[in-house]
Image 1 (spheres, one colour):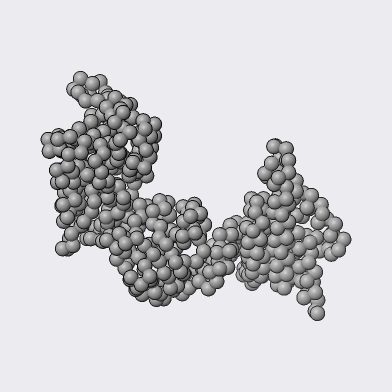
Image 2 (cartoon, chains in turn green, yellow):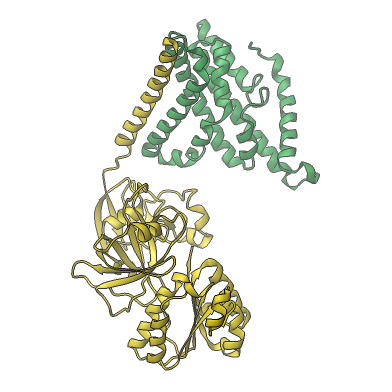
Length: 198
Length: 370
């Protein structure tokens, strides 16, 4: 195993557990809180995020290092990353609708939602700040996506468990969900000694 | 300066490449080729090009499924049973389908895209629905905002409809409107008049089709009409008929009255026509004629907002129809049946009043304009 693959693997595991983008950076909260009402749609959204994060982090790496850096247009990265993410997601939607209708109907309604998910943009920006290689970026994207999938599935399961509990009225809905997410984040801190990335 | 140009062109190039990619993907992957459409277990089998909605595909093969909203997925009228090849129920259909309908494989044909061989089942009446090219032969403002139209059907095919049914009128692209749209309008002419249809179209502020009709349409213009649709027609009983309408809701009632004249019908009938002011009332002479020809027919126009000029000249009733019913119909309501047509406010208020006076809900028939 060469150095790059090795560090990509480390970054992958770190992104799932110690540096979970939802629970340590608190990005992607809107879909995290609203979709986690049901376990089934959480898993659907989670897999869509895995797919989009992995592919767009690779593409955005190529765009950043081969177009923006040579042309000295690094300051445009926010706009460019968003356009790339949106365009690519649309493209994948068309292909999926044609060739894998079952997958399209499972993920289809979530894909447009993810285009504006800040966690996806966050992954692209972190990859730039942390100066990852291509392989590391893809590993980080895949890990970030799986981290989102894990976090949203756990939150959805917890919310399903507490649906019959007596939550004080002021905290019902979003309130208790944020508290749950906070407790989950504390739980994930336990992983922090395991691996560390900058 | 050069930096700005480079930045702008780089962003445009990236955006342009993505747009091109999407355009190409749409072109190559949006094509589904020829698929087989099977209707009512082999009654009609035809090869069609996939990729469009089932509603549009059926329309292209000459089968006109009723649709009031023109395929936007907002009316829920275009339901058909899809036995095979429909794929899973889409989120856009879900609100219109109850559990019973899902079990019976009912789908919204305007939302479902034909991708592969498909087998569907539709009621036999739908085969009766045809389409015509039609030419505008008459256009007359009946009251402010109420336009009376007469469309001559081109070709030799006659239209056979039951008084009270509606047609779909195609409004082509005009002005700033970039897409042609269909809207449903009740037929106001006599059912024996099979070579033309009369319509009454009320101006809806900002409405695509009504604006076209009121402001753009000219005598001699041609468009497309399909029909007849709907189950709003006079039931064949001996019960007293209570009709209630406002505005262009008078259209199907006129057709029903013509049909009664033709059959020399002696059923007791009362038609309440509600308007705010005197100038909003129209077709009063026509109603007088019906009163002469139908011995047991009474026309009751009523004004809900009587202005000071009207109050001297107006000899008729005033106030809401729902307030007139107890005095004018009273106990007979329990054995009567009702036909309501107009905006949803009027229809719902009238239906509630009729039910509270003892009319069973299944004897209240209505056509509600959304």
